[in-house]
Image (cartoon, rainbow, N blue to C red; front, side, top):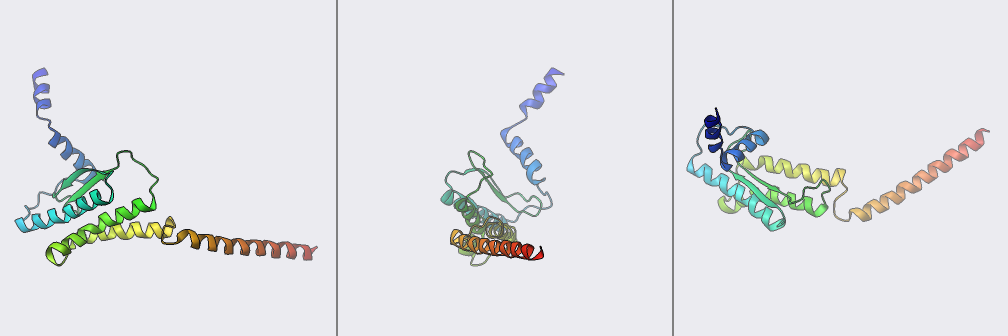
Length: 173
């Protein structure tokens, strides 16, 4: 019994632990077919675009995974983490995430003069981030000036509505 346990432990490698983690988070790598050399090169260049953009825009990020294995709808992935996780993302941080998401599109066009459908998930992610920035977080150029102006206008309307309601109530008595 003890020898069998030692034998199993000896076969666990860092690579097998990373693969197990990726299966839990991103799904089992698709064994359907092996990439052709040109496909693998395109995927590697696409993912390298994300990696370079991550390092260029956010040097504090730690690249933890660069893969060209198909998992679900994704042909590859770059994963990066902040050294200290946070849920309080800034406008600059979200703008950097936009740049990283769009880097694959730019990289494919620089290398090949066109892009593949592989950018679709990245464009969808960038669109979602941009929509959230504007629609949910109020993060857009001159946002503070516009919000201040609209807040003042809204405040004036509320005051006038409250005044009208008070006046109306006074007339009822």
